[in-house]
Image: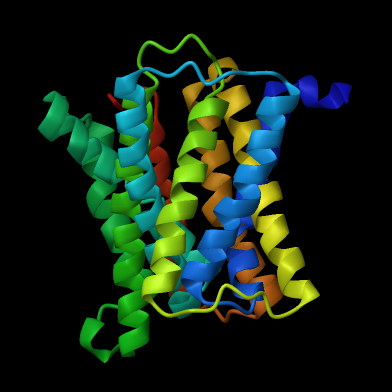
Length: 293
């Protein structure tokens, strides 16, 4: 498939595929932890098959294994929070909030690595919060309890997502492999056990109600979790920071589009404006002159 030789095309296809993640969650008639469990089950199977077919060994150090265990804990928390946020406030807003990880990464850079935020980053943080306030409304106490929980879970997703990215980044220090297929496969397999434990503790059933639900969950694991991230990861070293930022912004943008088109989400003008402001803020956090970690 020669058209996939374009790194930019792979990047944007990958971003489009992962934008469908919250759609699969909403469409499948299973509990939030169960959909997270099957995401990593089917995603892990696809990644392991890929590694076996391409005959790629793991070749990971003890330090990498430890950090990947940490990354899998953060990833499990990411899924646990995010899937509940999706059900409470919809695919669009929940995915937008998850991408606030940009600002958590910035804070981590300041606290852990003593990096000085750029002017653009300093502008981006209050801009993002203002955009969020326009989406959810300025009267927090007047919002339904489930909606409040959805926003809180979305922001906690951003924290867990940042922890996952930081751990995965550290696990890859010294790696000679360009694409983190091995690391993502290991994290996925480890997360199967974490999400399986969550399902058991919550007393939910592992049963998949019907063939349509099975189809949504397979699509979630194979198309979004496996193929989507492989496309993105394989292109990152070949495209500019600006292109990466724009492509990753495609995820929450398209998630809003799917929310409106598929689930008939009603959005008022202030909500559209707020979403645009928040996306602009996230983009400013990706700018190449920002000292990202």
